[in-house]
Length: 253
Image (cartoon, rainbow, N blue to C red; front, side, top):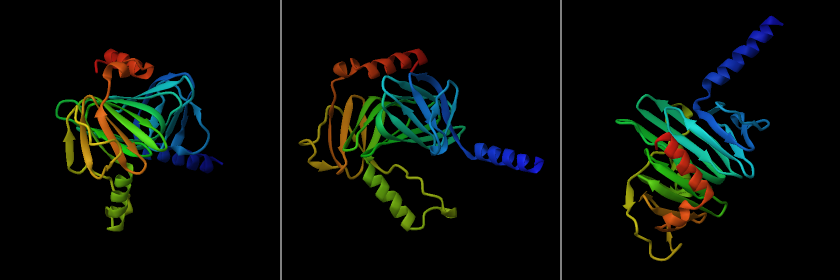
């Protein structure tokens, strides 16, 4: 009996040790739930609850959740949203975070410290947005997703392109040890506001492009996109945006 108990304790400890921490829940508002490891039942999110790779965070109607990233930075989820944590690779001067927004809204505010490299990538059903210490909002839909830039620069590509590149890496052998390759950002084309592509949804997004403050891009599931300068005054009136800006001000972001 004692041997069985020791074995269970060792297994639980090993599982906890191998799960990389993404951050901690710092502000669960309303009905916020977490599924640990992506399996089993969803449980109520509690303040200071650790969030790890493979966890899924879900908010219901009139609910929000703030997660403080390991090493600093915030990720906030709007109502009726679902976010799966896919990467938490934290080193003293280099931090890489990844998440898949299955539906809903997410706000990312993650400025890098001096000399630090910080990348927070959010994938939606149709697009991938990756930052290196800046501020943006992503909205996920089955047929179309949007990325809006509030500060700094955000690199964006169609989700299909990233998946195809990752599959090609796998076909070519991938990294040693059989692990799935980490997709790295390729060369990007910087788009300055208020530039707009010629005609909405006439061009497919084939490469990474870098959006600056004030720009919005909408990417459809067929890879075609529309990019423009969004109305920041109208956007600032949205309840989710207003709340995030208030929280950022409190945090000094």
